[in-house]
Length: 336
Image 1: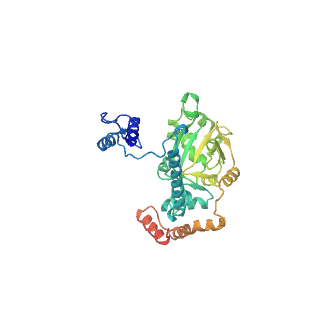
Image 2: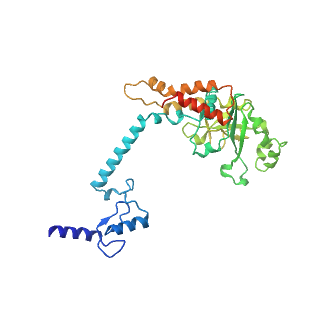
Image 3: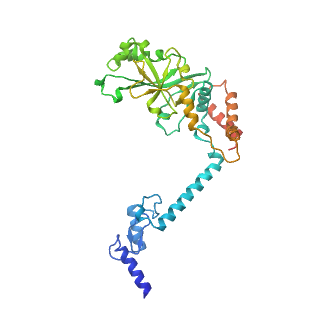
């Protein structure tokens, strides 16, 4: 008698079935909390609401509504996250960071060529828009970079109604051996068709002349990088100006006709970048393991990669067959 009373009280607490509305509800869906009275009603509600019946473990629950069940569920969820993270740390395929991942042949060669030039080239993952837009390539035979450059001409007249009074142009292939004035001449020198077409937007820059322009490289890899920039030397080549700098995919260069940074930016030199990056990138090692041992362990497979790259130094990498052959040799030499 007592059991029947308890069951009746429980079902009455749930109310009527929300599917058929003919019987008292006996069950509550863990995910959407729909009250049902029988298996057919449960199946109908799953089909109509596209519900799998599994409780959302990350759903927000106010602290005032949390019970011991919610606390225990959160605890178990955090334990699973910890185990997952530990498993990934011990997985040989996952032990490399993003900067140390195995890159395609062409990208790896670009990274190594930039490193020889003392340029910290950072390549993003494939799904990033900046990576998709990047058209920078390395002419392996000539040992020459052709950079994609994003030009931001600052101090545009207010009547142009542009964000921050900046207009943007993109050059897909810029020879690193040319100077900055040579690269930007197509926009400033009125003998070029592009300059004449942009006469309204770039009137101030064209009036000042190439010799009076200042070039600023947008900073990367430092604190407040979105508002900081480096002053570039207009008498040097693009390659010389990028020495000691961090580049994410391709450089963004601001052009002004004033000898001061564009509005909203502050100047920074390379030594400041070097110090700030080292402050943030403190290596984490396990107890009893030296940082040198960890670094050597991470570089083992890439040493093989570098040697293979050197072996192919005299060949053209523009053909797909060369890339596939190189990747096959690398996979045979490295056991992850």
